Amino acid sequence: MANKEDKTITANIIADGPGELTPEELESVIRASVGGLELTPEQIRKYIKYYNMLVERNRYVNLTRITSPTDAAQKHFADSLLGASLIKENARIVDVGTGAGFPGIPLAIARPDIKLVLVDSLAKRVNFLREVCEALGIPAEAVHARAEDAARSDRLRGHFDHAVSRAVAPMNVLLELTVPFVKVGGSSLMYKGSAARDELAVCGRALAELKCKARLVDCEAPWGARTIVAAEKLAPTPQRFPRKAGSIEKNPL
Ligand code: SAM
Image 1 (cartoon, rainbow, N blue to C red):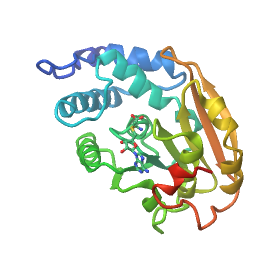
Image 2 (image 1 turned 120 degrees about the vertical axis):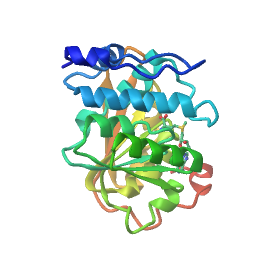
Image 3 (image 1 turned 135 degrees about the vertical axis):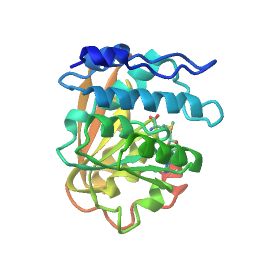
């Protein structure tokens, strides 16, 4: 719950930047969108610092098109938190194709119990994420790699309770990129929009080959239809998956 002291926290005002994200605005957006999530003043401070780093770096590194305070609070922070209740306590999670850190970093701020690995194929974004984690005191590892390669490393394959992903690839491609990271009994949580059901309808072969069963979790979000598709892993992933970069997109399961 916010206390009086919180009201004095303000974001740095960035000259010519997209604006100031106030603690009140951030907290009310998150509360309105993500039921049951309490944030401490320290967590609110971290979101604001992250927002400031994001809009500042975005001036010269392409990180995101969403930069206004309200849009960032809703479409980046609150949206990322929609999956928080699906993540078990003390979970190891991998965010595949994390970009500027979504949904992984907002989840790690709200849920300090989780152990996070961020994976992205673009070095500039991974370098930014390392700086954010350092500045915010988030003990996450940021891996610069394609998911197809990272999922073949002994250290990462079959190691996570959950994979999370947002806006990375169509679902049949995404299943092959994320499920190999997950333990048997864990799940790949794919953040999707209004096309979730249509995408899932063509995933029969991918789910069978990757030994998963999926369920849909619809979330009420003021900024649009959001559905998290949770693919639970029922058995180990066959060694041939994920296939090489290129073949997955060219010939999706
Ligand atoms: N998840 C973030 C979000 O919701 O804002 C970023 C979305 S951005 C549209 C997609 C990101 O996925 C990019 O940063 C891209 O580099 C990364 N990406 C796409 N395919 C990938 C792959 N095979 N392995 C690792 N990263 C990948």
